[in-house]
Length: 275
Image (cartoon, rainbow, N blue to C red; front, side, top):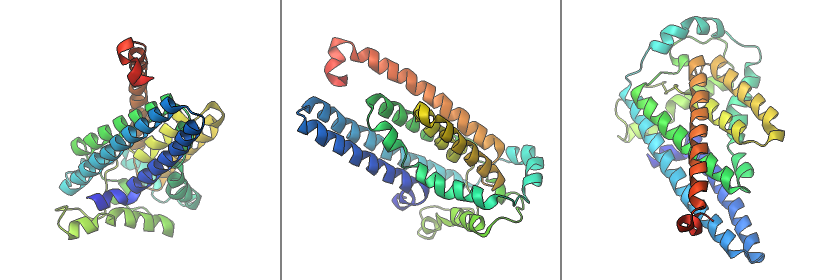
């Protein structure tokens, strides 16, 4: 199961986390050089605390996701409802290469943006990580309770670019190692959980955390990833809508938690802990 975390998007998240640790380490070094030991100590504690929970959350998410896929008890509600949409988009070809580039490569690069956006603000760090925890753990629970097969495995998609078809193949086979070695039983080939879309959800989270000057390009990327998720056959429309709504809900809860922490920090008994 550890290998499955290193593979696919989880490996990128872990790489982004290492980037965050590196940036934080530079900040700690600067604080020490300026003789600001308390600030340096707080950053070090934060980096370890957030990082450990981040890794634990990814591990739980991956285990639950593969469990849902291994069971293979997919619901067909979304497939039945949204079938007319995919009868229209299943032959989509114009611009598919561009959407594929954004969906596969640009989205991968997006994983390295949050460390730049949150490293200089402890409140941004706190809200981002809490939102991430809530988003991925709740999504994993949904995968167990309401597993949905990706539409490309339900409908016949024609004229997909070669790189898109290859990516579908890699998505379907990235856990075959686990099956071969007995870690996952009854793993259905060429299937993956689709509801909610975390490609869309994570891109929307980047939009939420982005500063005002970057809101417009961040929202544009969100729209492109959303469109690519549907037109390339990875997700239903409702997957992206659910991912967006879940991210917004987690973001609101993280904001309330942030305010609670600040109120506790104002009390004398908690002041040393949060200052």
